[in-house]
Length: 201
Image 1 (tube, rainbow, N blue to C red):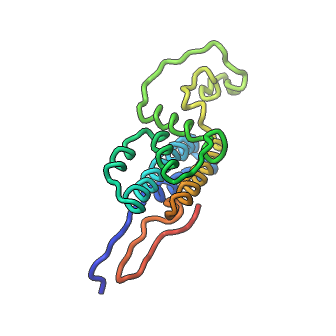
Image 2 (cartoon, rainbow, N blue to C red; image 1 turned 180 degrees about the vertical axis):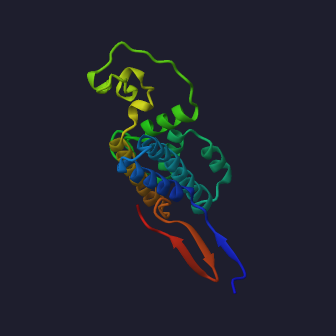
Image 3 (cartoon, one colour; image 1 turned 60 degrees about the vertical axis):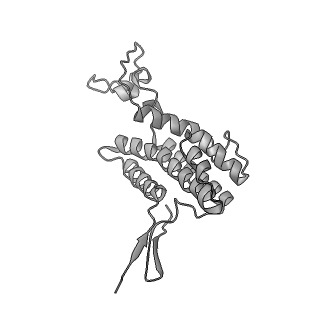
Protein backbone atom coordinates (compact mmCIF):
# COMPACT_ATOMS: atom_id res chain seq x y z
CA UNK A 1 0.00 0.00 0.00
CA UNK A 2 1.37 3.40 -0.99
CA UNK A 3 1.48 5.62 2.07
CA UNK A 4 3.12 8.69 0.61
CA UNK A 5 4.25 10.06 -2.72
CA UNK A 6 6.10 13.02 -4.15
CA UNK A 7 6.40 14.42 -7.62
CA UNK A 8 8.59 16.96 -9.38
CA UNK A 9 6.72 18.85 -12.07
CA UNK A 10 9.01 19.95 -14.89
CA UNK A 11 7.29 22.51 -17.14
CA UNK A 12 10.13 22.43 -19.68
CA UNK A 13 9.39 18.77 -20.38
CA UNK A 14 5.64 19.32 -20.83
CA UNK A 15 6.07 22.44 -22.96
CA UNK A 16 8.59 20.68 -25.21
CA UNK A 17 6.19 17.76 -25.66
CA UNK A 18 3.35 20.16 -26.47
CA UNK A 19 5.51 21.88 -29.09
CA UNK A 20 6.32 18.51 -30.66
CA UNK A 21 2.64 17.57 -30.80
CA UNK A 22 1.70 20.90 -32.39
CA UNK A 23 4.48 20.54 -34.96
CA UNK A 24 3.30 17.05 -35.91
CA UNK A 25 -0.20 18.41 -36.53
CA UNK A 26 1.21 21.36 -38.46
CA UNK A 27 3.24 19.08 -40.73
CA UNK A 28 0.17 16.97 -41.48
CA UNK A 29 -1.17 19.94 -43.45
CA UNK A 30 -4.67 19.42 -42.12
CA UNK A 31 -7.22 22.00 -41.06
CA UNK A 32 -5.68 24.51 -38.67
CA UNK A 33 -2.08 23.64 -39.59
CA UNK A 34 -1.11 27.34 -39.63
CA UNK A 35 -2.31 27.78 -36.05
CA UNK A 36 -0.46 24.60 -35.05
CA UNK A 37 2.71 26.10 -36.53
CA UNK A 38 2.23 29.28 -34.49
CA UNK A 39 1.66 27.15 -31.39
CA UNK A 40 4.77 25.02 -31.99
CA UNK A 41 6.85 28.18 -32.39
CA UNK A 42 5.36 30.04 -29.41
CA UNK A 43 6.03 27.08 -27.14
CA UNK A 44 9.75 27.21 -28.01
CA UNK A 45 10.62 30.38 -26.03
CA UNK A 46 8.29 29.23 -23.25
CA UNK A 47 10.28 26.00 -23.07
CA UNK A 48 13.60 27.85 -23.05
CA UNK A 49 12.44 30.07 -20.19
CA UNK A 50 11.40 26.98 -18.24
CA UNK A 51 14.85 25.49 -18.95
CA UNK A 52 16.52 28.68 -17.68
CA UNK A 53 14.47 28.52 -14.50
CA UNK A 54 15.22 24.82 -13.99
CA UNK A 55 18.96 25.15 -14.55
CA UNK A 56 19.17 28.44 -12.67
CA UNK A 57 17.40 27.03 -9.62
CA UNK A 58 19.77 24.06 -9.66
CA UNK A 59 22.85 26.29 -9.84
CA UNK A 60 21.77 28.88 -7.27
CA UNK A 61 19.67 26.78 -4.88
CA UNK A 62 21.03 23.22 -5.07
CA UNK A 63 24.63 23.29 -6.26
CA UNK A 64 25.22 26.30 -4.02
CA UNK A 65 22.63 27.80 -1.71
CA UNK A 66 22.23 31.46 -2.68
CA UNK A 67 18.51 32.25 -2.55
CA UNK A 68 19.08 36.02 -2.57
CA UNK A 69 21.15 35.79 -5.74
CA UNK A 70 18.61 33.52 -7.45
CA UNK A 71 15.76 35.81 -6.41
CA UNK A 72 17.48 38.58 -8.39
CA UNK A 73 18.50 36.41 -11.35
CA UNK A 74 15.11 34.71 -11.67
CA UNK A 75 13.35 37.96 -12.59
CA UNK A 76 15.88 39.12 -15.17
CA UNK A 77 14.94 39.32 -18.84
CA UNK A 78 15.61 35.97 -20.57
CA UNK A 79 18.83 37.10 -22.29
CA UNK A 80 20.27 38.49 -19.04
CA UNK A 81 19.19 35.35 -17.17
CA UNK A 82 20.94 33.25 -19.81
CA UNK A 83 24.10 35.33 -19.35
CA UNK A 84 23.99 34.91 -15.56
CA UNK A 85 23.51 31.13 -15.82
CA UNK A 86 26.29 30.81 -18.41
CA UNK A 87 28.65 32.85 -16.26
CA UNK A 88 27.92 30.75 -13.17
CA UNK A 89 28.41 27.56 -15.22
CA UNK A 90 31.57 28.93 -16.88
CA UNK A 91 29.96 28.26 -20.23
CA UNK A 92 31.09 30.39 -23.17
CA UNK A 93 28.09 31.23 -25.34
CA UNK A 94 28.19 32.55 -28.89
CA UNK A 95 24.72 33.91 -29.66
CA UNK A 96 25.54 34.04 -33.34
CA UNK A 97 25.82 30.29 -33.83
CA UNK A 98 23.80 27.17 -33.00
CA UNK A 99 22.11 26.45 -30.72
CA UNK A 100 21.83 30.04 -29.41
CA UNK A 101 21.41 31.86 -32.74
CA UNK A 102 17.60 31.77 -32.55
CA UNK A 103 17.34 32.86 -28.90
CA UNK A 104 16.65 36.54 -29.63
CA UNK A 105 14.17 35.83 -32.44
CA UNK A 106 12.23 33.32 -30.32
CA UNK A 107 11.79 35.74 -27.46
CA UNK A 108 10.94 38.59 -29.83
CA UNK A 109 8.21 36.38 -31.29
CA UNK A 110 6.89 35.59 -27.82
CA UNK A 111 6.97 39.24 -26.79
CA UNK A 112 5.00 40.36 -29.84
CA UNK A 113 2.27 37.79 -29.17
CA UNK A 114 2.22 38.08 -25.38
CA UNK A 115 1.98 41.87 -25.55
CA UNK A 116 -0.02 41.80 -28.75
CA UNK A 117 -1.20 45.07 -30.15
CA UNK A 118 -3.64 45.34 -33.01
CA UNK A 119 -2.17 46.98 -36.12
CA UNK A 120 -3.63 48.23 -39.39
CA UNK A 121 -1.66 47.21 -42.46
CA UNK A 122 -2.04 48.18 -46.10
CA UNK A 123 -0.06 47.74 -49.28
CA UNK A 124 -0.29 48.33 -52.99
CA UNK A 125 2.09 45.47 -53.78
CA UNK A 126 -0.01 42.35 -54.37
CA UNK A 127 2.00 39.38 -55.71
CA UNK A 128 0.30 37.34 -58.43
CA UNK A 129 0.41 34.18 -56.32
CA UNK A 130 -1.61 35.98 -53.63
CA UNK A 131 -4.75 35.92 -55.77
CA UNK A 132 -6.50 32.59 -56.34
CA UNK A 133 -8.12 31.35 -59.55
CA UNK A 134 -11.44 32.94 -58.60
CA UNK A 135 -9.90 36.33 -57.89
CA UNK A 136 -9.97 36.14 -54.10
CA UNK A 137 -7.08 37.61 -52.13
CA UNK A 138 -4.98 35.17 -50.08
CA UNK A 139 -3.83 37.74 -47.53
CA UNK A 140 -1.26 35.52 -45.84
CA UNK A 141 0.70 35.53 -49.12
CA UNK A 142 0.99 39.33 -49.15
CA UNK A 143 4.15 40.40 -47.27
CA UNK A 144 2.84 43.92 -46.73
CA UNK A 145 -0.23 42.58 -44.91
CA UNK A 146 1.70 40.49 -42.39
CA UNK A 147 2.61 41.60 -38.89
CA UNK A 148 6.27 41.09 -38.02
CA UNK A 149 5.57 37.93 -36.02
CA UNK A 150 3.37 36.51 -38.79
CA UNK A 151 6.21 36.83 -41.29
CA UNK A 152 8.24 34.36 -39.18
CA UNK A 153 5.64 31.59 -39.17
CA UNK A 154 6.60 28.54 -41.18
CA UNK A 155 7.32 24.85 -40.61
CA UNK A 156 11.06 25.09 -41.25
CA UNK A 157 11.45 27.86 -38.69
CA UNK A 158 9.45 25.83 -36.16
CA UNK A 159 11.70 22.82 -36.77
CA UNK A 160 14.86 24.91 -36.45
CA UNK A 161 13.64 26.57 -33.24
CA UNK A 162 12.80 23.20 -31.70
CA UNK A 163 16.30 21.97 -32.54
CA UNK A 164 17.70 25.12 -30.94
CA UNK A 165 15.63 24.53 -27.80
CA UNK A 166 17.03 21.01 -27.47
CA UNK A 167 20.56 22.26 -28.05
CA UNK A 168 20.22 25.10 -25.56
CA UNK A 169 18.77 22.82 -22.91
CA UNK A 170 21.46 20.20 -23.50
CA UNK A 171 24.35 22.70 -23.33
CA UNK A 172 23.07 24.52 -20.25
CA UNK A 173 22.21 21.31 -18.40
CA UNK A 174 25.55 19.69 -19.22
CA UNK A 175 27.49 22.78 -18.14
CA UNK A 176 25.52 23.02 -14.88
CA UNK A 177 25.70 19.28 -14.20
CA UNK A 178 21.96 18.72 -13.92
CA UNK A 179 19.38 16.61 -15.74
CA UNK A 180 18.14 18.04 -19.03
CA UNK A 181 14.56 19.09 -18.19
CA UNK A 182 13.34 18.71 -21.77
CA UNK A 183 14.26 15.02 -21.75
CA UNK A 184 13.33 13.80 -18.28
CA UNK A 185 10.39 15.24 -16.42
CA UNK A 186 7.33 14.84 -14.27
CA UNK A 187 8.73 11.92 -12.30
CA UNK A 188 6.84 10.38 -9.39
CA UNK A 189 8.61 8.81 -6.42
CA UNK A 190 6.73 6.26 -4.35
CA UNK A 191 7.77 3.50 -1.98
CA UNK A 192 11.38 4.36 -2.74
CA UNK A 193 10.99 3.78 -6.49
CA UNK A 194 10.99 6.19 -9.40
CA UNK A 195 8.55 6.32 -12.28
CA UNK A 196 9.54 9.01 -14.76
CA UNK A 197 8.52 9.97 -18.28
CA UNK A 198 11.75 10.07 -20.24
CA UNK A 199 10.88 9.70 -23.93
CA UNK A 200 12.93 12.11 -25.98
CA UNK A 201 11.22 13.91 -28.82
